[in-house]
Amino acid sequence: MTGLVAVIMVFTIPIVAIVTDHFQKQSKIQRDIVKDQLELEKLKHENYVIETERLKLELKQIEIHDVKDESNLFIK
Image (cartoon, rainbow, N blue to C red; front, side, top):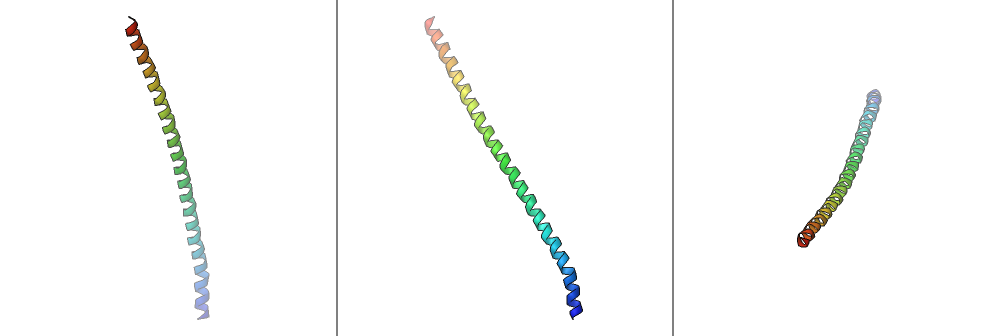
């Protein structure tokens, strides 16, 4: 009986270590994926803000251009 317990312990400890190591590696990979996704979302948000500001400026330019065209019509 003691021999059986010893054999089971000899094989169980490395298996548990391998499984634990696997789960730790999976957790690290998952953490890296989440970090990359967070960085991507930050970049998307920054791009959205820049694009919105660019469109606002374009609209202002169009409005200014339209006002100039209207004033030129009144002068003629």
